[in-house]
Length: 228
Image (cartoon, rainbow, N blue to C red; front, side, top):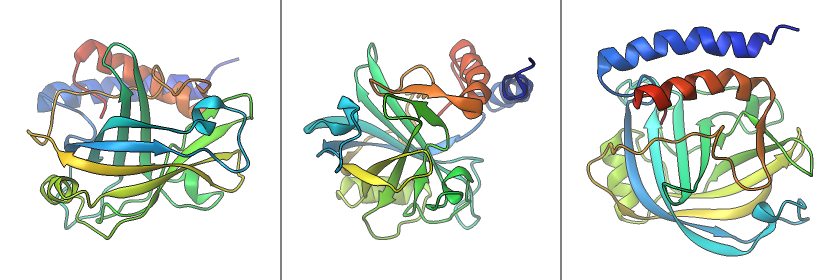
């Protein structure tokens, strides 16, 4: 049976590759601020039965907050929040997009101006608990999503989110806190994230969105230019 999601992903990967070559950079999320943060996992209640979500520990992470189409901040844009744990040789990547928070809204990208807001993985992860989605829920004051204000706020430790997960369309259950600790320079580094290849332990990228994304990430790995 034809996989329409995978076919659509392959079709989209071609123009994205052309845009990346034209821009000599990322096709999507070309403008963003990269900063250091700490991810404090406190576990979920009730637990998910997925150790990575249920563990209690603290890890240094690298975060990139970006504007999807690269539009200037006076205009709304779909925002991206990317988090990396671990090392470049053994990374764990979480990629979230600005969305709504409800059972249907969490599946729909929402353009915004302020970086403060709800972010969701949209893509589901297969797990022992069932299909899991991850979200970042705001815990800080509004700040413009342009890279410079984001970097300034990050340097002051003023960017914070509560990370939560949900099984299917269930309620969000907080399992961690994300808090910026310092800014990095330059604003855009060479770091690239891949949510399909580098999911958290115990989670596997799954469903139509994963099959749609996979060709774009493959193009990114070849070109070294796409992705967040």
